[in-house]
Image 1 (cartoon, each protein chain N blue to C red):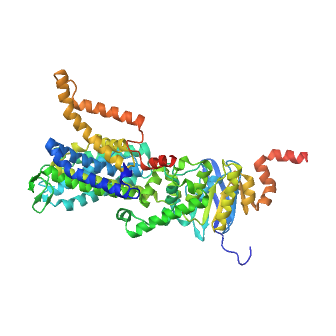
Image 2 (image 1 turned 90 degrees about the vertical axis):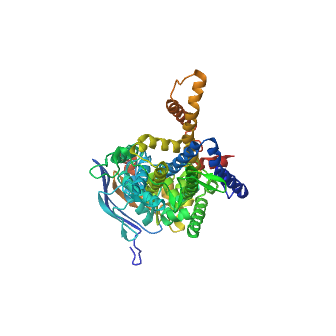
Image 3 (image 1 turned 60 degrees about the horizontal axis):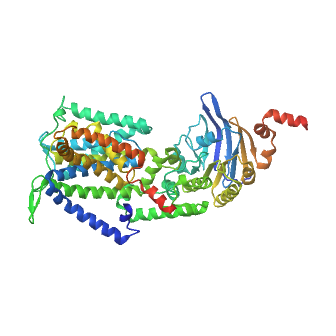
Length: 357
Length: 267
């Protein structure tokens, strides 16, 4: 897929490709809204997962640090937004102030997790990060006493949507005969953000910093012997990955209007990691594809499994949720067997194939 | 020592290292002069690689001091040692296997370049210029060691000899004052070894001092100015290749003491 966007090799083709994709992205929400309003919301959630996967890809794909508690940073970002823009503390800061704060706080948590785990690798790192993810969730569940900070398992409600002056992201607006519903407005915001974050990811990957991360992933001892400060580089990876998670969390809060610790369970971490692995660890476009697939396929199943069974057997035999997990597991097993490097393996292997031809 | 003698590039004094009950290095001392090729030999398990690991900060010494380029080199982390100007290769090649040859060398430039996250994201003129410089230098170094044609091949797909050369290129990319090579000729055929010898000569000519661990005695004897011989963690001889070669203690270490006595008896 990347070769079509390679400006050096095909300058005109790349621009045509970019324009086509841009037009498609602009028109998409109206097409989806035609099918059903729910699909715009589902798309927005999928884009949030793309953002999350891109963040996790920095930690897992670039630096090779297996993080099983990534959803904790999403939770931190979500709660920072919820606490600063809801009746809970009666604070209503604008989103463009809170999102950076959320990113910064998540970044701090990233370093907090990174610092004690610097010497751990592989399985051991996975266990500690898994524990970290759970600790954050349990804290959120219990920090309603002695001071009611998070409102415990009830969660936080009536979270403010994004607002710029009188422009409200939650209410529909008619502009030039077209109705821009709340989800459609968020969609455009998310698409802009995801484009920015994809560019950041691609540029980081092809930089001195990105190469240092790859060196650590490949061989930490050799990386250190080559003068790379592995401690700082690992902390940087954790911090950057976490801040992307924090931003996504803030947007999640705003779009949902309600959050509780329930939204940040271990399965969510596993889900994001699966998106990264399925799409192609270390390949930005692969990760985007993985996140979109794993977000949409379950939703498509939700809408098809029930009517299909009713049509075939006259009643529901297997719950959609069960089939979802079944197919999900099967897909992952097949992937590991036939495409262990992901749907779109990292660019390096592709370059290698080109060399051989 | 003449009056105009410059300070040694590397001075080791009383270096000791123990692993539990095993003494890997016992009171090892030596000096490496600027611009020489200094050989480090000894039978398997003599402590050569341990000395490398202590020198480059992978292990910390239990005793003794290194002075490098006029400054102490104690308790530094491996990356700090590299920053000070010692680069190394590994006995069991440690390339970044899934990265291209070019990228391996570009990573070697890390320690001498400054691009940060903001520069990487914004791609400002300064960062772009630095990136170009890194890539150009990496190409030069690949050419220098003779693997320029394999620039885009993944390191793990390179021929064995090329991997050894790539490791040297990557080490050179850090602009070392001292290049420490751990058995660079291991597994090479005669032709590859001959061209390695030329490469070592070029590196020395271009101003980098070399510390060389090697089992290929022909290579050691032909390129090294001086040789240090270790046996059971102790220094048993030091001097020019010709002198060390005839040292009875060295012959005994390599052939086993009893054999030597037998040889003497037979003569």
